[in-house]
Length: 142
Image (tube, rainbow, N blue to C red; front, side):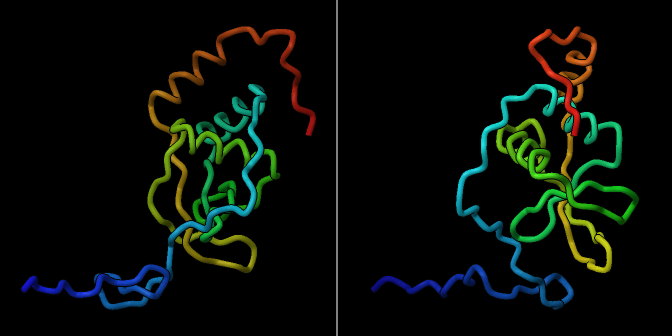
């Protein structure tokens, strides 16, 4: 007679960390509609520039809302076009998701994942910056 295995822990419920503290569910929520594909090279270079030259980006909450770091532990929301570019770069492997940090946005505080820029992406950005932009590329106004 085969031995029955114990039931695995269910996803979606509270969990405990190493010290027995309750940890909220961190499984990402799937979006109800697909994000639009960004084919704007100026927007991609601008987002990568923010990620490399400034404090970078964070993914807050289960919905993975994109926020931009403005200080060591402070972040602010970004426009939808910028969030779409960040998610597209994460999905394509140009950006990666890092560790969890305690951040705040206004009066709200909580945990958010950092967005990391791998070395190959930084090198590609530096090559793109040295090239002259084609006349078909428009500059972003907003």
